[in-house]
Structures are given as structure tokens and as C-alpha cells.
Image 1: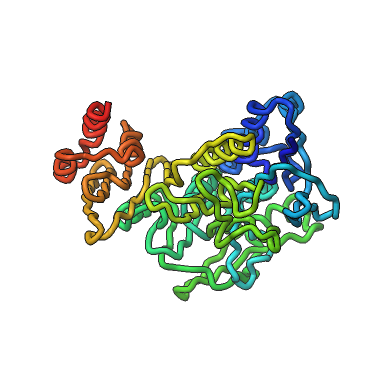
Image 2: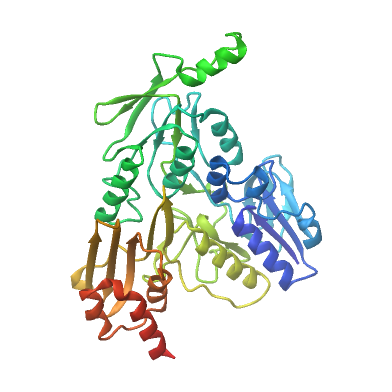
Amino acid sequence: MKHVIIGNGPTGLVAAETLRRLQPDAEIALIGDENEPPYSRMAIPYFLHGNISEAGTHLRKAHDHYAKQGIHLIEGRVAKVDPKAKQIEFASGERRPYDRLLIATGSRPIMPPVPGIDLPNVHTCWTLEDARAIAAKAKPGSRVLQLGAGFIGCIIMEALAARGVTLTVVEMGDRMVPRMMTPTAGAMIKKWVEGKGVAVHCNSGVTRIDAGSDKGLLGKIVDAVTGGATPAAGSLKVSLSTGASLEADLVICAAGVRPNIEFLAGSGISMERGIRVDNAMRTSVADIYAAGDVTEAPGFHTGKPELNAIQPNAVDQARVAAHNMAGGASSSGGSLAINVLDTLGLISTSFGQWQGVPAADGGTGVELVDPVRNGYLSLQFKDDVLIGATSIGWTDHVGALRGLVQTQAPLGEWKARLLADPTQFMVAYLATAQKAA
């Protein structure tokens, strides 16, 4: 059996290792398009922070891990999938056959159509190559403007702040982390971040980026080192939709991501925003599976196709796909929002349908704000089932919120108790778990 996996991030690697355990004699090829060992993008901010070395981003530390596992690592960009011939084609023109194919190509950063977005000193923070460039430029005192304050943006922001830069964040939404936090929660995070010395502009977009009026800190450093012999890119002038303009030495674009699916054009695989899969991670084409950020998988609550680019779902989908590629009959419970974020020391979480559902559909909710302790809780119900939750500043037993959402346990009388005092979620979880047992 020949298994080919396109994408060597956590999703692809977990699938490869699962396949090896299930089929000791199978051929397994794991393909990545970067000249790097398989690594975790989620570890890049920790590298920028200085908490880990480059090697610390690698998914497996032993240099001979893949050889011992019998996993063939291939570097190359796949340009085409040919289901009729059961082959993939690389950009080089080389072809490779498969019996079962897994597409785990993940996402890539969105680059807004902004004039000047391709200027020097404008970077994404998505690859190790990006991180090396940013680490060389984000020096203490340098002026850094970050475009985007979503989940990934907040993780990058923490790493940049730790490097001692003067940081400004621009977010088009009306609050920070708008796709994870309620309006009240997002506003609380903004206030916290501003209290840490980061300037935040919400309801604001970048309209253009131009060469600035001075060399900036980076140019002055280069001049000092080279004696002016090596020309350096100067500062950047960033114009905002509000009419304001800001000078920056470095611009980081963290404006979101989109699935890597363009190479699948003409393959016959059903796609919308991502690859459509069922709960077995099967695509619309026989013997082709997909998992991770590249997929639109059935949602946990709705059963409808959803993009849900978070690692816990991706790893679960990888295992399900591998079991089925090996001839099993595994099924995912559905894509579920599971977010835990540390923003400059403030812990926030959101689970499930944290936005809630309309009252006409049985939706009710409760919100608790504790400004003294920077605490916040939002619980969202459909009938007497907790379907979503958001928290800030709650670290003890917060996994119980996920448990209540994921088990979909009827709360009965506990719904009224939680509406009166949402801090009792741990007691409610234990009571419903005991009742279920």
C-alpha cells in the first residue's frame, strides 16, 4: 500500500505516524515544500520570544526519527493531483503514484490588496524563514506595526512585545480577537493590552504603505555597522482608513489565513472555501482524504461544513483520516471551536458556539464581568444544553466548560443555577457527569 501525504505539519505527521502503527509494511511519503524539517508554526512565536531555539520548533527532535519510522520525507511543491492516474505531480514535472492520498496542506497568510504590501520590511510571520527575518529586524526600540489582532496576531504580538519593540496593532474588527471573543471580552483584552504599552487601533484598516521620511532604526543600525557602505531600507509610512498615518520600521501582516487548495483545480475534488470532507475525512474523490486547516468539515453542533483552523481539530482529523486510509471505519465527532489564548499574561478561552444562537432557536445566555480581577464569563445555551462559552481570567477548571459543551449533557435544573451564577460551571459539570454515569 502506497500512502502519500501532502503537507508535513502536525496534521500530516500525526497521520503518517498513525499509518505506520496501523500498517507496518506500507510505503509512506510525507511531502513538504520548505527546506526545513517538519516543524510547528504555532511554535514560531516562542522562537521569536527567545523561549526556544529553531530546533525547538521541530515536531520531532531526534534526527533519525523519520528513518526509524520508515517515513520518507520529500521536499517539493505539489502542483497537481491526477485522480484518474492516481498520481501527484510536482512543480518540477516529476510524478509519484499513490494508493491513498491525504491532503494536509494547511493554510497560508492572507496578504491584503494594499499598495506597498510588498515593500522591504513588510513581512508575514508564518514560516521559519519569516521568523528569522523578523528576529533580525525587531530590535529593542524599533517601531513595529502589526496588521491584525486575531488569535494568531495576538500570539505574534506577545513575542514582539517581549523583544522590547514599540508596538502598534491595527485591527479592522470592532474589538480584539473578534472571531473568538464577544464584544465585551474583546474590549477587555484591548484595555489590558493598552495597559501593557501596546497601542491598539480597532475599526481601522491599512490603506497603503509607502517609504517613510527617515531611515528608521533599522537603517541607522545598518549604517552604524557598515559605515553607510550598504544601503538599507528606510522607515515605512502606514496610512490608515481613519485618515491617520504612522511611521514604522517594520510591518507584520497577521490579517488571517486561507486554505492552500489552488493546486487542486481540475482534480474533481469538491471545494468551497476549503476541501469538503465528511466525518471520515473522505473527499468527494475515491481514495483521497483531507484533514486539518485545509478542510471544510462538518461542524460539531451544526453538521454543516465549517472552516475551523485550530490544532486540536486538525490532529483529531489526522488520526481519523489515517485509520480510514488503512481500511478502518473511524469517524470524527465534528469540528469544534477550542481556543485558549495568552495575551500578555491575560488568559482567555472560547469553546463551541460562543456567539450563542437566537432566542427563536432556543437560545439564552448569561454574561458576568468582574473588572476588579479582569474576569469575564459568558455561557450560551440552546434549550438546557451549554453550546458555547467564553472566559477571561478563569484558569481553574476551565476545561469543565469545554466538557459541558462537548458532552452536550442536558443541564436540567442546573441551567437556571448557571444563569443565576455562571461561576458554578465546575459544580454543574461534576453533577451532570455523575448523573450520566
